[in-house]
Image (tube, rainbow, N blue to C red):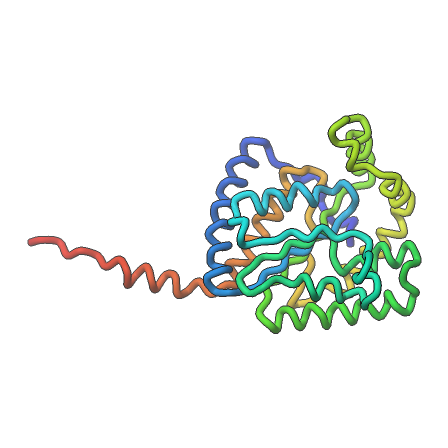
Length: 254
């Protein structure tokens, strides 16, 4: 499945700037509608190390009202999170009505890193596909707008970005020994990602695979997908009727 993704897609800086601004303005207005209609929204981001999740999230939030969203950076569970069912720490971070919750890494860690690193048994991570589908079904049935992203890059592009981080002083903190170790298991992760996409891309919560070799293209692709999802998920029909009734046309004088 991943091999079919066209990673050559790109944008010029000029096209990127134009499309970015237009989409951010639309998203800002939609963020207000999320609050007005009291709809919870979840944007879930997964992807390869150095695929650009953080950059995409920053462009999504850049013009949103900071009171209307929260970003959860998910790492290995600690404290109370480690003592409960793996979904517990996500249940308690679900957005309130009228708020957007953005997850940088998600409950899919169960079938990715926990599967590869052996933190979950085979029975546990196989069972997780069904548990996750049921979890997402409950969210959507409640009225949550759920958008899931896998940011996909080639192995060669990842290496180039790793080396760029290593050789750039202010970016070096982003690169860890764990990143290099995970890279050595690329084939295992490809198999896990393929299974994840196949078993958890449902009609009510489909995956969006984002071609991310070009960061500019990926950021616009993510923004466009979020805008489309909110425009579909929110009831905006009343807005048009309000405009029609609140701004009556003046009669021309004879």
